[in-house]
Length: 479
Image 1 (cartoon, rainbow, N blue to C red):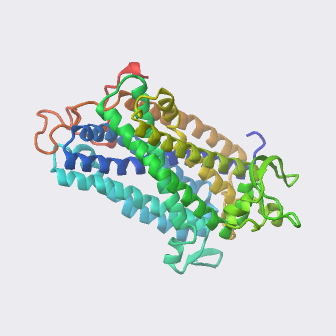
Image 2 (tube, one colour):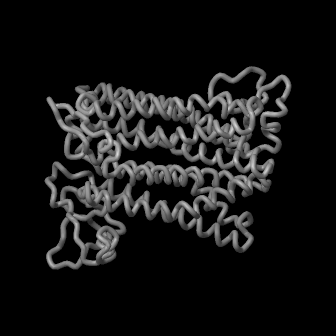
């Protein structure tokens, strides 16, 4: 396909499937915690707005959760099909970590998910809130194990290589490897930000269409508070993560910054805002830079230096062109999120938070920004690690299975068609749910007054799967 090698096709296939998958767990993590807050506020204040919002976002959570599980299963199988040599070499580390994720997080979520989705009028308020909390905790535990595995591939430690295979000798060092705390915090906050932007965009969309209800106002206001509080924290965590990456993966930092070499006699390293890293010429063309700012950010000194890409053999360099721009997409969107939060705070102070069409349009456009930033961040992380699959230990070229380019082209094409059909339909349905908006009076009772002859969502049969929590009667006009 297009003259690509089997290795390149295998990488594209995994990148395609994981890119589809990551957007669903990110929203699941954020929505689960948001649902805990909504139900807690409902039990505390007895304000029906929080109850209505809980039931509205529970439906969206159910659809999103189901798509996340399906896309995750497909992705996981590729470790055995396309990356069998990696699985053979490092499976003694990655295998148990993924198994711990299933044994702790997935079973915890599965055990309480049914109570959370279908138990509103069947169990007491305290037990239902506990189930919602357990689902939220499960999503965070799941993220912890997945990021422990991936972080070990970035900064491996706590192992020995015996007979050509990785053997863990210290599980605490394997799990709590140098990049793990920074990457866990960065990803968790990113999930909360992405969800807040999604919720905020939904509220702004309804406000622009004249649906100015207490529920819409409440979810819009809560989302903007979250963005205002969390966006600056994410910027600070990102800076700390960058310093950690400079210590353990300096070639990745050089690629992110488009920095090729330290000029003799130069004071510090400039920050290149924009440019085009040319891998063949070993320089960044058309660059716009700020003198010494790169040193200040990465070394906290105006005269500090860090290695450029030219300090590494060509075969050990990541693709600086892609990494440079994916990093800037992530950072640029991060500052736009900060702008959204600050602008919203100013309008709130002026009493015009719900009445500024320009701001509401900006909030609507920013809806997918969190997910785009997550994808850009993962591209930066994964492509920046190349040419290593386990950094400094195993090259990606040595990890791929012995498949032909023809076979990988065929399966990649099949993946693209099936994913666009299946998940395109799922995302379309999810957006229709969002467009319908929260309805007043949903879920009345909370464990005290069940609706005769029907379950929690007005269906005549007992639900048997997460998607049953979502209604079938979506107005076709919303599509």
